[in-house]
Each structure stands twice: as C-alpha cells, then as structure tokens.
Image 1 (cartoon, helix red, strand yellow):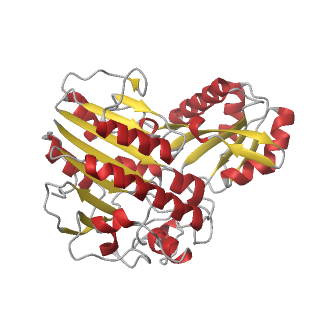
Image 2 (cartoon, helix red, strand yellow):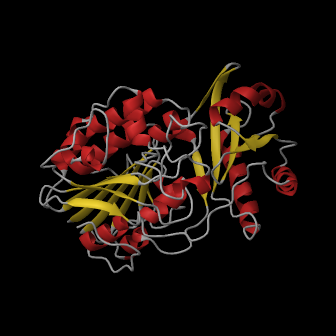
Length: 405
C-alpha cells in the first residue's frame, strides 16, 4: 500500500517573500527564526535530526551534515496569505486572483441581507478585530441581546461569534451557511474565502472560544486537486482537523475535527500504527474500494490560532516542541511504502506588529527512511507537495510544480 502523510504546521513561516510589502508585512517577518530568538532557542531534537536547521538561522536548532530528510523552503505562487489559499496550493491548485478583504468592515447591504435572511434582529461589530479581543469587547452585549458578533481580519473571512448559551451551535452553523450562500451569490464583487463559526463560552471578563466546535465554510475549490484524484482512484483521503472544511469536503473520503494539536497528533499516530476506525474515529463520506493508495492530511492549527494571532511567541514555541515530541513517535512508523511531508500554509509571526498572517515562504521536509536525503533549496511553489504525492501514489494529475523526490 502506498501512503502519503502531510502535516501542515499552521502559520510556520520561514522568511518574508519578496512581495510581502504588498500584503502589509515587513521584510523582517520570519515566524520560525523570530520565535526561536524570542524564547532564547527552540528545543526540537527530532526536527533538527531531519534537517530543519539547514534552512536558516534558527536559535537552538543546529544545521546538520547528514540530515535524515530532504529539507528546503517553498515560495507561495498564489496571491494571498490565508489558510485556504495555502492549503489549496499544497494540494496542487494555484490561485491567480486573491480573495477580497474588508479593512472597513462588510458593506451595509451584505449586513442588511444577512439580518433579513437569518432573522437575527441586528448584529454587533462588523470591523476587523482579534477574535479573542472582540468577544471580550462585545460579549456582554451579545449575551443581553442575542445579536451575533460579526468581524473580519486582514484575511478574507466573515466570522460569526456567538456564546453557546445565547445561540445554540445548530443555529450558529445555520447562520454561517446563510452567510456563505449570500456571499456566493455576490461572488463577482465579494469573493470571500471563508465564513467561520466562532462559538465561545464563559462569563463576563473571561470568555473563551471553543476550538473543537469551530467550523469553516470555505468557497468550493474551482478545480480538481490531488485529493480529488485520489478519490477518483477509489483511494482513501483522511482529513484531520479543519482539512474537510478548507476543501469543502471535496476529495475527502474520511474526516474528523479536532480540538487541539494533541488530538490531531494522537490520531496521526493511531492512523499509522493500528489504523483509524470508521465507526469510532472518523466521519465516512465515501468507503474507498482501493486500499492501495491513501493520503493522511492533517492541519495542526494551535500554532496559528492560539499563539500566532495572539502574539504569543512562548506559546508558539511550546506548540512546536509538542509537535516535535510527537514526531519521536511518528517517524518510526513511516514504512518503505510511506512518505511524510511536513510543511506550512503561510506565516503568522507573533513578534511582528499586528495579529494577522504574514506573507512568508514555508519550510518543507520530505522524509522516508528509504529515500536518500538531498537539499531541496528554495522551491517556486507550494504545489511541489502535490507533485510529490502525485508521483508517489502513481496518479494522473497535471501539477503546476515539480516533485521533491
């Protein structure tokens, strides 16, 4: 059985791209290097053994003469610095036009139509904000009125935050579906990438988001990705974390949402060692008939959601060290039929001004104990990951990059 495993460490940028200024980012942004410097050095023995230290100056992570893996960086060819754009390009789909952003909030006719269709009465917010800040700013009023909190960011997102005691999850999810439909109807002028349900709980002054109940309602991929090609071959595509939301279930045969990196990493270990149970672990969208090819696609979001956007370099470092510790369990499970690719979807440098994503190149690590390691240099597109999976699994897919193998 041929198997590919992609671990996306959300927001782990590795240096500003030349066009970063077009996205409001400083040329000094470098999530990995700056986090390491901010905490006085990272302790990542497994990533160091793979060769992570060979891509740049990372305090605490030494370069190696004989790394276990092929290591380099990748530039983003698509226009954007958001989760969906990055993941789609990793899967082989390059976007030429960026999604629209809303630095002044959403136009009034969109808000008025949302209120009309949802019958929510009114809304609160409608401005760019940090998700943790906006629920503390508006949470009390939201609990009094039941009006949803709507906000955006530097990314193309329409986010709806509701306290679970004021708005039950099924209603929040329905409101998000309505918003997605509304924006899709106006896609010619309002091509918003994601509508995100942001449920929260707690009391005044101590509101907390509920990561496991978050849902992303993305636009549909405009063309086929490697996920679709694996599904067409009756293979297995397991999406862990928010993968199924990012791809709107397109090409996904099995999926599970996770509440933390720890849960996603535990599921990865289980998938590689004993296999995941369709009855206990996964939602099954399609039962594949070809057990010979499979992809495990895992998004590890804590680095981005919990720490990058909150300018918490120490927390970011801790999340990286947790991932590294799990690699100590994952690497021995990679067999001769497997390849493991570790990469990221964008940057989110917590040491830079602001709380938004940063336009950066990303690391890429290709590991198999049966592949001879080689320097990968700087790749022109994230789609080199898709090309690698295409070659490894023997797919027919016209990929806009080159294989890492």
